[in-house]
Amino acid sequence: MTDTETAAEPNADKAKKPVAAKSPSAKPTAKSTTAKTTSAKTGVKTTAKTGAKTTKTATVQRERPSADRKIPVRKLQTDPTAVDEGWIVPGDPIFSHLLATLSAVFPNGEDFFVASVRRHRDAIKDNEELRAQVKGFIGQEAMHGREHRALNARLAEMGYNTVRADKVVGAICDRILTMRPRTLAIAATAAAEHYTGLLGETALEHEVTRKILFGQEAVEPLICWHALEELEHKNVAFDVMVAAGTGYPVRAAGFFITTGVLAGYVAVEWGRSVGEDWSKITKQHRHRFVGNLKRQRLLSWWFLKNSFAYLRPGFHPDDTQTDELIEEWRVRLADVAVLNVAAAS
Ligand SMILES: [Fe+2]
Ligand SMILES: [Fe+2]
Image 1 (tube, rainbow, N blue to C red):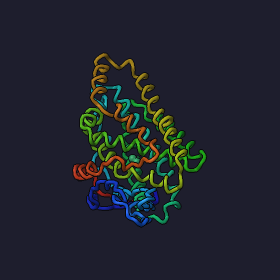
Image 2: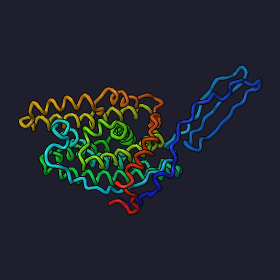
Image 3: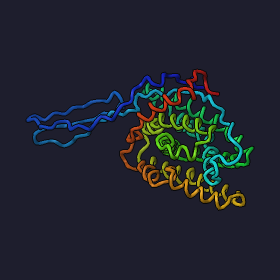
Image 4: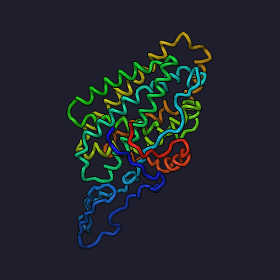
C-alpha cells in the first residue's frame, strides 16, 4: 500500500439532505432564457430552458451528500480473533456459515475493488474531492482486509473453511480484472460496493439483524466499523466508474457479474459449508435458523428489492440517504475505531 491515508475529522462534514428538485421557472417568462450551471458538488453541467412557448427542458441538478464527504481511515481497537469457541452465530450453525463465508470473501474482494479503482486514476486527476475520497477508500478497504484476514485465520482454526472461499474469490477477481472492456472491473466493483453499502445499512440500522447475526462480542465491533465505512465510501467506486466514461450497458454487465458470480459464489459456498457440517446440525439448530431467518433483514425482500434498484438508469448511491446513520455511528464507534494517520500496511 503506497497511498498516504486521509485522516480527517469524522464529524467535520455535516449530514445533508438531498436538495429537492425545483422547477427552473414556475412562471414562464415572455423571453426565453437558457441557464447553464455547473454544480460545485458534482461537476455535472445542467441546462434549464424556460420560455412562454418554449419550455422544453427542465434538467435539474441535485446536490449529492457524498460529493464532499470526508473518508477517514480508522484502526479497529478490538481484537477480532477473540471469538468464542462454537458457532459464531450462537446456536445457529447455518447462519454461522453465512457469516464465515462473507468474512472469507472480503479480503480478496476488497483488494479487487482497490485495483479496479486505481486503474482509473487518470480519469479523476482533475477532480480533487474525488481523488481525496479514493485515497480514503483505499485506506479503509486495506484496513478491512487486514482485520478480516485475522478473523478468517481464527475461523479456520475453529473449523470453518475460510481458506477455500478466499482462494476461489481471489481467482474470480483476478479473472474479472483481465476481462474487456477495461471498465468492466470498475463496473463490477461499483455494483459490489452497492451490495456492501446495503449490508452496512442493514447492520447499522436494523438492530435485530445486527444482534442476531453479528451479536457476538468480538464480531460486532468489527462488523459495525466495517459497515460504517462502507456507507462512508459507498459513492466512490460508482463515481470513479462514471468518471471513467462507463456507459449503462457496461454498468449493468458489472452488476450481473457481481450478482451472478460473486454473490452467487457466496450462496454456493454457504450451502457447501452447511452441507459439510450437516451431521453436526440438529433439529434445534434448524429451528433456531428458521426463527433467525424470519427476524433478520439480510436475506429479505427488502434487500433484494434494494439490490436491483441499482439497475435503474438514473441510479446513484446517494439515492438512499444514510448520512444520519453515518453520523450516529461515527459517535457510537469513536472508542472502537480511532483515526489512523499512518499508511496502511
Ligand atoms: Fe470494506
Ligand atoms: Fe467498500
